[in-house]
Length: 407
Image 1: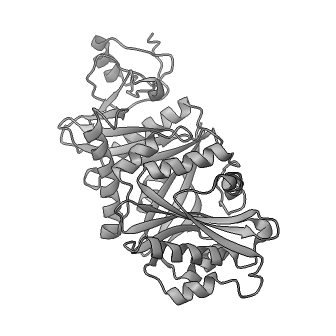
Image 2: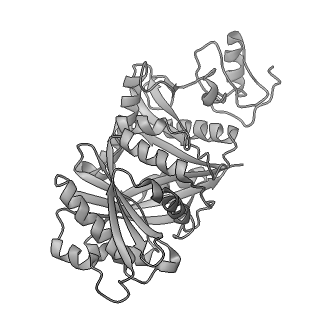
C-alpha cells in the first residue's frame, strides 16, 4: 500500500508500465493511474527492488538528460543463453568498448562465452542488468557478484557505460539500482575496480567512484611479459642452484591436477586470502575444500580456457607450499596470470622466482601462439614485483580497488 513516504526526495522520472516499484520497502505496487500524480509530487522513484534471484516483478524506466528524449529501461538479464542471447552479447560489447576507450587496441576483455559460463557459478553467483534505450541500444552494463562460501556481506559491483553515452546519468542509474539489490541481499561491503594506462589518470575512480562514496583501498600495478621470453634467462631462474634454492622441486600440470593434490591446492587457495597484501580492503579469510577446487578447474575448462599450474613441492615433507596459475583463453594471444603464492614459512628460498620461470617455460612450449602474459600485483608487494621484474615483466597499466560500506 502507498503510505505517502519515500526513502529520499527523488528527481523527476518518466515511467511506462503496469507495475511500478518504489524505493520505500513498504510499497509493493502502485496503480498506473496514480503514477503521474506521485511522480509529479516527487515522492515516487522507480527502483525494481524485488530480488532478481527469484524473478523480476518490477522494472525501472528513466529518461536521462541528454539522451534526446529516449527512455532508458533497466533490464534484468536472466536468460543469456536463450531469448536474451543478443542482449547479453550487447552487454558484453559495452565492457569491450570501455576497454578500447581506456587502452585502445591493447585492451583485453572477457568474451561473451566466458562470461556466460561465469554466470553459471553457484559459489559466486552474479546478477546482470542492461540499460537499454527505446530503440534497443544497450548504453550501459551493470552486475553484482555475491560470494557464497565466505565474505557473505561482500558484493562486487560492476557498472560500465558505453563511452558514447556517458555524462547523462546512466551510470548513476545503474549504480543506484545495483547497490539497492546488494542491500536486499545483505551485501553491506561493496567493492569495485577502475583501471587506466600507466601514463594516464584514474578518471572513472576520481569522477565516478569517489563522488558516489567509494574509497580507494588498494592500488595495483599491471605488468606484461612479451613471449617468447629469453629462454636462457628463464632456465637460469628456474634452476635449483643458488642460495637456498635446494629442497624444493617444481611440478607443472595442464588443465587440472592429480586428485591427491586437491587438498593441498585448497590450502594454498585459503592461504591466498591470508598471506598476501590487501591494502585497506576489508576481506575475510576464504573457505576452500577439494570440492571447490575441482569445480574451479571444471569451470575453467567450460569457459574454453586452458590452465597451466606450476607447484612448489617441499621435498622433505612432500607438501605443496607454493603455486602459480596462468590461464590461456581459446584463440587469444594474451594469457592471464591468476594466483601466485608461496606460503610465508617457505619464503626466502627463490621459490616464487623458480615457479614463475618454470610456468613461463611451460607456457612457451605448450602454447607457442601466446604472445604475452598479463599479471596484476599490489603496489606494496615488493617481493612479487621483484620476481616479475626478474622474469622480464614490464609495468604498463594501473588498477585501483575501491570499497564502500553500504548503510
